[in-house]
Image 1 (cartoon, rainbow, N blue to C red):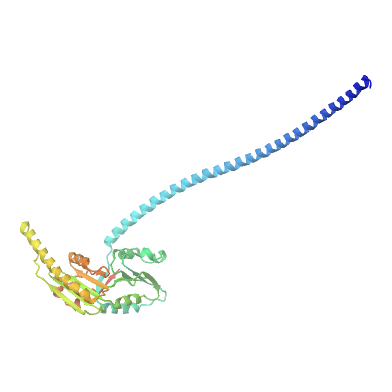
Image 2 (cartoon, rainbow, N blue to C red):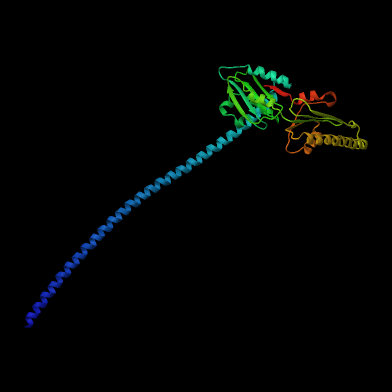
Length: 347
């Protein structure tokens, strides 16, 4: 083969390679441009997403700022209402304190067991088709507002509620109230009420009180005075089965001052202590012989009552009666009638 032919062939081969290179470069450029377009599209999508996220964030920040502002405003209003409530509460308490000083019970009396039965018989004769006769049973330590619905509580006048709040007898109380105020009074029973309840009916609810009054309980009565005391046991709360009068010589109170008075008072205290030893001797024997005992009813001088309470068994319920019973002037039958009496308050 001649040199001329070889040269022509090489030139043809080089031409083909050059065209291939040109085509390859054009193809790579197209792919790069396509990738760039795709990237630009992705950038546009991300920019739109970022813009949307920024808008959402701005809205949430605005809502958060508004929520903070609303919360601050609500807290300010709440504090204002708290201050207003406290102010009104103080004013109400002041008004109540003033009114309580002026309010008085329309009447107070003690009802013997026979008298209270007659009283309840009359009370049961009241009937109202409107169903506006309210009866409330309140054990000791229970207030109207603690269990009575607000709607029912509002039916009772503020003055009447204030008078009721003054009373907190350890046996509780029963409140009879006509919404037209023809009847508004409270009975303090001799024995503790078991539970609280209220009844708005066409007649007063007296059954629970009658059951309490007629309950046959074993009771011990102590009337304690310096030098003269009484102890009696009634197995059915109707009549004493056993009764004891304890008398001792106790010096009268000394009115002079100085050393002689202090010495006299010491001797008087010794006399009282000796008298109480005699009382406790009889008391321990009576408890032992008549156990079990449901109630011990105490009456008399407060220091002596406190001393007796410490000597009594813990499983016996103690009731302190405020009645002023004079042992030297009263027999056992009258003492029992007094401690079994109910107290009536007219509101």
